[in-house]
Length: 102
Image 1 (cartoon, rainbow, N blue to C red):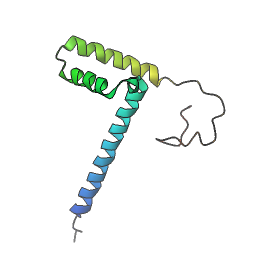
Image 2: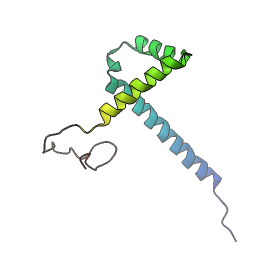
Image 3: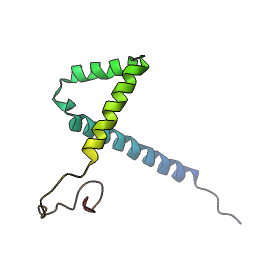
């Protein structure tokens, strides 16, 4: 005879996973704001700029923003040169213990 499925525990696991994904997305958006330098802007200015971006209808303007964003990620994702010796505990970074150097 088959064991009945525990839907409650499955739903809880899915809810936990959804919460983790949402927290990760919020963290990544914050990192993007900081990496782009937008964290120096007043919160009202940043919110206004984002609202205008959402409301923008011109496809050419959006395409220009997309290209600029893609170029930003190409430049920032390239490995940065680091000193040979990392500070103590340098391998214990958020997102994994493996070193970013090949």
